[in-house]
Image (cartoon, rainbow, N blue to C red; front, side):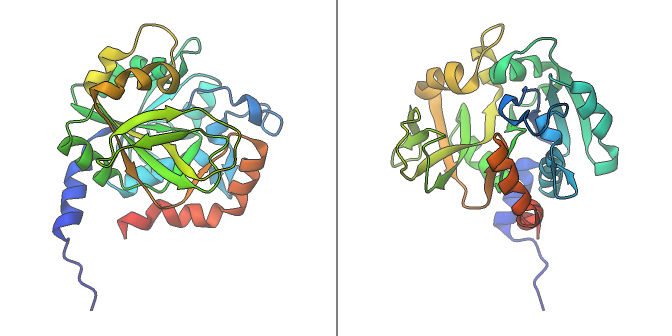
Length: 259
């Protein structure tokens, strides 16, 4: 008979993630995908029989994270109409809508009012899916007193992403821009745990987490946690087509860590 008693490690993960808010960055233009989705925001691109963004909502809910902030921009009304206040997914959704493009960092800064006084919060890119253990990410983030803890994954060809270099303690020491060479490497998986002090390091106006903020935070404590599950983004027509092929795997990965 299967042991249904929660194990200490699982309990620690669940405790770490309980009640933590998650900011989903869903306001980009999706320029490269407009050829196949001219009037649909990228996070609402259908994968299988559901919007891509629904996968992220279900993944968060499966791991006990139910306070969500949608950071919207381009075609924001479509996303709000689709998900409303989240009650149909057993989550609570608030919206932080930008009036003009703010970039990934500017969008996080704008969402500050919705994050409240929580010391830590999650940030997820709305156009990529990573099979991640959010509770473990948060637990290690707090153990290390990190400013940012980034979920990373190893891919056989990192040429289109750039790579993340870490030391023996998994502290991030450098970000390497795309080189064009087809080599394996650790890449940013688009899932982060932030300490709220990061908000003070984001300048007013448009800015990028990856280009403007993260390089300045390296000396303040950025760590990586490698994840070994499914990873895909839908940033190009080719990757969007691949997501369709993997739709069943993605659905299974949504619930993998909750079973």
